[in-house]
Length: 175
Length: 187
Image (cartoon, rainbow over all chains, first blue to last red; front, side, top):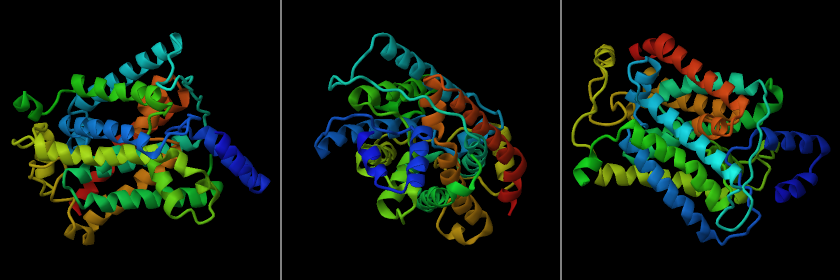
């Protein structure tokens, strides 16, 4: 976090507030480590991603058809996947907190509380609409392209454009 | 063994494996599981355009880009080495509904009749790939996360905003799949 704060303090005060707010609202996918690793340390995450992608494909989680079944209540499959993933995630976080488990570098593992804002409702609904159309959340888009559905590159580029447009107009949107 | 791996994996194998990603990323390097932020890092790296939302040290989050690149390669490997020779088995009602829209190919995980390059120039293909993708990118960032960051990581960490966001993801999906998508697919 320190890098970000130092960086942000160079900006206008208003920008500082906005960005700080974003960081506190948007804590997913944030790296909390203070340890500087060489670039190849990131290969660990590449390997985890490969395994994760294989599970995505083999359990048909990236299938447009499975997503349609989920939203038509025609199959338990996706509910089973998401539900059991949450159960295992919840138990893991409980154990990490209870036994104060450290990272492999000996750092304390950080958790962030998320603050409620209306974006979770408006944005959540908009993402839900897109999820049912494309049959994919952001992760499966990458795996779908990998399996050879090359036209999904367009969907991914459009998703990046959507993220950019959100960033461009976020001050004008209700939160 | 290989034959077994080529079959579609059941939810009770896949779900726990996905859940284990949460502690794995935390223990390997204090990383919170989430995928949609990778799209934000791409914006910050490629086209920040002085927008405050993209002014941060994205290089610190580069692990996330390695992670999604891995997901891509995972897709390549699974399709190359572990591909299921049989067509997908879907609910008969869905199959009947899809036949009405001219979707009958179940050899791939996404319907080739909808998601292909020439289809981009048709209203149906344009809406499904371009508009659909835009909603995914815009909506996840507006909500502050996607299925991984909110539904799995957020709910696992007992965060009420993530429960609310997940309910909205599902509500949007139900509305689209049942009320709007039939019209789009008929185009």
